Length: 317
Image (cartoon, rainbow, N blue to C red; front, side, top):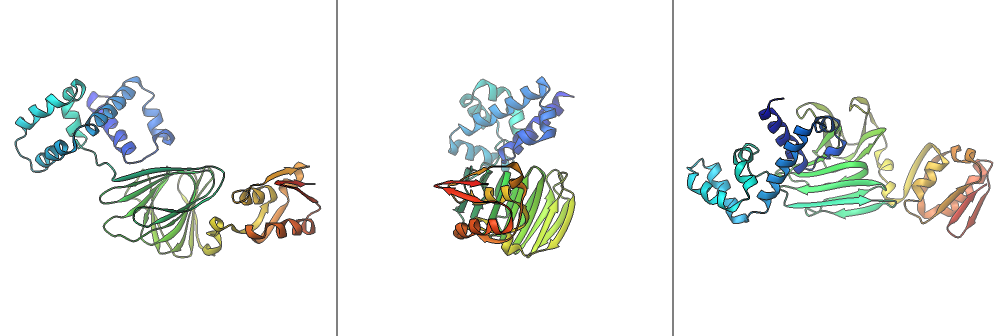
């Protein structure tokens, strides 16, 4: 690959990383960076950005204004070269090529939720997010957009409307632009789903920015395969589906092990199965974690099991 092309590609990947993309899960990036020359170019580009970020803000603002207004910058360049390290000075043209000052977020925060659900996380614009257990997101607010990187897991979004600052959720496979208010995104290895409770969202393929996959409206559920191809788009009872953050579940032929796993996201319990077969018994119905003891009492009426509760440990016999 020509040197210029390598630099261009390196700039592209660095820009995506700065914008919140999770490159370690990007197959195309992982293949590209296996080459030593590519990896070196990528690391150098990152170093340049770090050097730029360390420069005084007032100086950067001055230089950005000059670039935008297309004025003569020769004198300013001399000042600039005295302030930066030799690495940046030698690569000044590369810096300008990547738009010189990549837009940095005004607000940035990462959330890593482990084994318990985290509800009603309040964002700077009063939008709220509820995160399921084992979910990772990064939130970044820029001047003209709000971006959430959902690396894995499940989240409910209740978004404050702002046409001047669209709200966008990125996953490895799809991007979701919010045209409404309240919806859920499920991003697991074997499950990709968008459920809209209120408003409308637009879903596109991550690697094809202009390729719209679907407009998902209130009361609809969009399911996709691992290649972000549509499996189905149906009208469902979304309201019941989006109550897991409140501890309310609608199970449909769900394995007992999965049922207990959901309840354990709200309760401090430990489940022991005397036999593996018991894990596969199926449960259907509406259940509330507030009435967990009632659920335990009902189980022996449904399946040939006995429940023994010992403090926080529940033994399924």
